[in-house]
Each structure stands twice: as structure tokens, then as C-alpha cells.
Amino acid sequence: DGAERGSASKPGISVSSGGGSGHTFPISPSTVLKIQKGDITVWSVDRSTDAIVNAANEKMLGGGGVDGAIHRAAGPELLEACRKVPEVQPGVRCPTGEARITPAFRLPVSHVIHTVGPIYDVDKQPEVSLSNAYRNSLKLAKENNIQYIAFPAISCGVYRYPYKEASGIAISVAKEFPDAFKEVHFVLFSDELYGVWLESANELL
Ligand code: ADP
Image 1: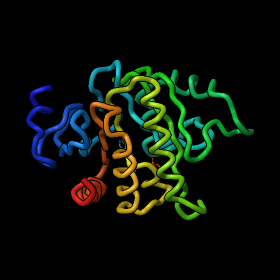
Image 2: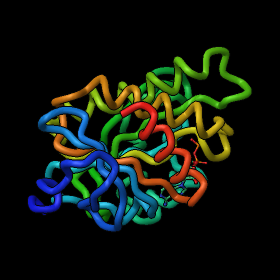
Image 3: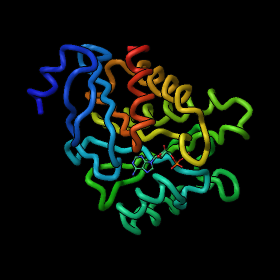
């Protein structure tokens, strides 16, 4: 898809790699941010330097929403790998705002990065926790030589984070990593989320 990326000279008008159409925004000479609608469990670029991010919970043993979908698609090996992640407190493998990495097993990517976003109405500083979740996921990806990474809308499901604020944080934190990745994708599951993410990208990029 080099030709596709090469044609992405005009911000916001292009197609994406990794399946489906979307919008492309260069954030540096070597990195593009892509916003697309879709199912993150089928997203893939090259199966060796790509990763999807899971909106997990602190136990890291699966759950509903995107977490459930990722575990179903990855197969039971993912749950076994998550169990092996050491607990930092009883029952807590990944505190809110932190990130952990595992292989991706039956998913078409190399790794899953598990992060935990804030529960919007419970967290005392939800914007700090959400930005930490994005930032620590990107740091961990970089440390593991990931070149292509895809995020869902962390905390925008049962954790009830307002979409507009969440999208602003997601895009702002991605901009903190201008040359670390070839592509940073946001894969949004609904038209509404997709529209809000696009609006923020047009404002911030
Ligand atoms: P959280 O607990 O962090 O709120 P959820 O899984 O409830 O996590 O929701 C996070 C976001 O993931 C929601 O916006 C939801 O629409 C979205 N989502 C659910 N399934 C998928 C999927 N297969 N691909 C991408 N996004 C998904």
C-alpha cells in the first residue's frame, strides 16, 4: 500500500491500509494518523510489526465490549497469556493508565497491547488516566518495535467517557510520538464515534 500512503499528501483525504476506507492525516514526514470505521479484531497491516490495543480492565482476564471481541478472536491462548502477567496488587495485573503486551495468537497482528482507561464517573482525574493509557500504550509499542498500531475508543463504551473529550486526548497524545511509528490508526466501531474522531482530527491536525 505504499502508493496509497504516498498519495496522502492532502490531510484528511485518502484511503487506509489495514482494511476499509478512512481518512489520513500526516503528523510528521514519516508518520500518518488514520481514522477509520470498523472492527479492530480484523485490522492488520503486516502481521509482524503491527499491534492492536485492547480496552481491558485491571484484572486483564477478559470482559465485554471490545475486550470480549478481542479475546474471542484471539482464542483461549490470549487468556492464558494474560493470566501469566504478574499481579501488582491482588487481582490487578494492569492498573488504570498503564499498559501490558502479549502475543496476539489467532488475531491477524503480532501483538495485543492491553491498557485500562478510566471509568469516567469514578476516576478523580479521568483526563490524566486516559492520556496515560494512550501514552503508555504507545511507549510500550515503541519499545517492542511496533510500526503500525490501532486503537479503539478507549473508555468510550461502558466506562462512559464523553466522545469529544476522549477523541481530543487520543489525538493529542498520538501527536507526542511524531516519528515513532509508520501508522497510528483509530478504528471506531460506530458512525457516531467515527464522526467525532474525524471532527477532532480536523481541529487538531
Ligand atoms: P471501555 O470499558 O474502555 O469503555 P468498551 O469495550 O466498553 O471499553 O468500549 C470501548 C469502545 O470500543 C466502545 O466505543 C465500543 O463501541 C468499541 N468497540 C466494541 N467492539 C469493538 C470492535 N470489535 N472494534 C472496535 N471497537 C469496538
